[in-house]
Image 1 (tube, rainbow over the protein chains, first blue to last red):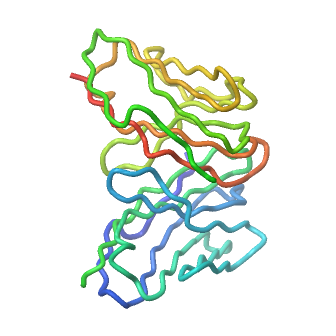
Image 2: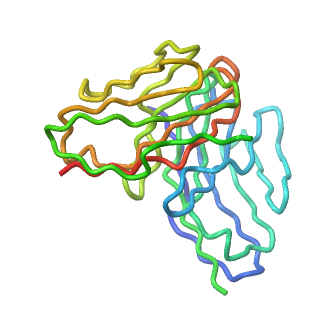
Length: 111
Length: 114
C-alpha cells in the first residue's frame, strides 16, 4: 500500500548548525502532515503540522515545507541544540485522522 | 494541558498472565488510539475509539482487547501474549476522529512478555 518514508535514517549535525530532515509520501489523498519528536523512553511529541493548502509553516526554530508536486515534506531546525537529539517522525493523514508514520530519522547533535 | 497519562510505565508478564494497560486524558478529546511500537520502528495503529465506540481494529489478534469505559479512559486488556508482543504501547487522543487534528501521545507502557 501507499506509505510514508524518509530519505535518511540518521543525521548527525554540529551544535548551532541547521538541520534538515526529509520525508517522502506517496498517498496523494493525504491532506495533513505532522512532525513528531520522540526522545528515548518517551512518547512522540508534537512539533509542527501543515495542511495541504499550505507550502510552508514556521514555528519556534522549526519550519516545515511541503512540496505537493513531488510529494515531499521537510523539517528544518534552526541552530540545532543538544536537546534536539531524538528520532523524528513524519506522519500523514489521508483525511480520517488515522495517522500513518514514516520510518523515522535519528538526529544526533554533536557538541 | 495536553497530557495523556499511561500506567504502568513498565510491565513484565508471562505468557499465561492477564494484565491491563491504562490510558487517561482530560482534554475533552473524543477520539482515543492505541499504537504498538517496536524498537527502532515507527508507531503502528492498533485500535481507534470514537465517542467511546470502537471504530477501527487494525487486524489485531484477539489476545489484545481494548475497552473505553468513558470518554476519558482507555484500557488495553492483555491475555495469553507471546514474546513477540513485547513492545512500547502508546496511547493517543485527539479532539474528534472526523476532524483532522493533532494526536497527543502518552509516554507509553514498555511491555516485556517472558
